[in-house]
Length: 181
Image (cartoon, rainbow, N blue to C red; front, side, top):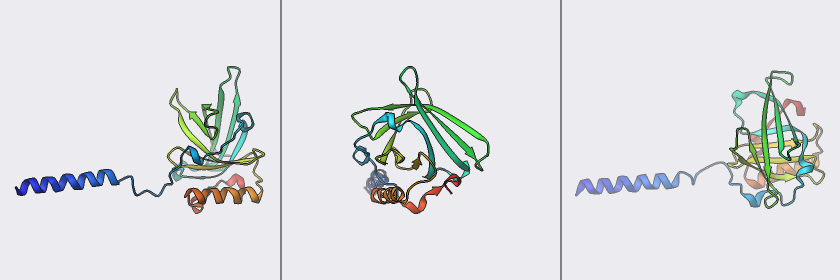
């Protein structure tokens, strides 16, 4: 009798631990409804510079990120990310991949670095003139502020800050790239 009570208590505690582990997290929950509602993908193509990011491991020591995207002759959207380590002129690491975009979910782009394994990235804010945008990964563990050039108007920074805080991110965790200053 005592053994069955202990076993019942153990399974009850184990089930509670199993079902409650996802309840306490410091990352916000982001879904399709938090993304931009209108996007013309052709205007999003071109060169982008990472101004700030959140969630990248410190040991990567990335100093500068430049993203280039274009549509190739087959109609596929190709993207290359040039990452400079340590300093603005440090070793270059280039990542290439493919982007998919669905008009039914304009604020979501799917990106693949390897074969056909795509990951969703959410566009949370996009300026009307397509000069800056704010994006995060599907788990809301990484966040990026991107701009067409390094000189961003204060009004756009204020809008992105307010969007970041309204979604539950902590703006004090942003790591600004050296190339922004």
